[in-house]
Length: 113
Length: 115
Image (cartoon, rainbow over the protein chains, first blue to last red):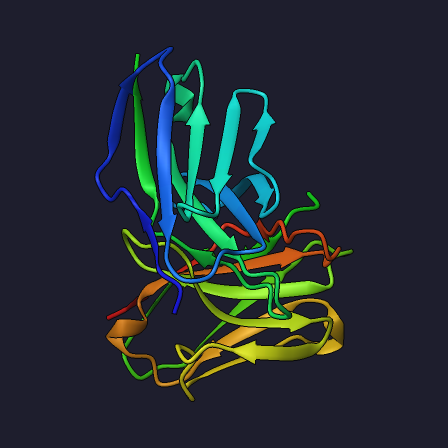
């Protein structure tokens, strides 16, 4: 079965720096890879989706890369702010009929002012 | 508010009792998903509906769990004879299947505590 690895340790960075989060997966590359943000006690919120034939996607201060050879996605937040502090989840959509997402366990980001 | 809503937000029950949760998806979405999330883990897929049809159930969904989506609108998830291991956050999500990616909109979740 598909396994997803995200850094289980929290990532602590200073405000204004770029945060880089990693998502590695095994087995088959997904048709789509998604990133979600989750705050404590709340449901995940969709951030970005990247397709298997795309190398990079940007949205405001967010950037996602997708390397199907390395089986890895990187998620970047530039000019980070304390409000960016949250858990970030990587999710795979295999693009088959089910379309349910397979999530990683998430990486907690803490941006220090 | 046109987002996904879930009720109740919190449920505390004793082992052996039955519980039922409700999810109201975004009205124009045709897909509805149930996930379960425990502390420190990502959401795990339980089951999903396309309109009113339940198309897949995870092996995580034991016989004690049942989900319905009558008329393709709201959905309910029932857990019978609850066990302490059922304690978790139960998340509902909905999406519109465009065939070009499956961005899902999640509700706030129902936190279940089984004593």
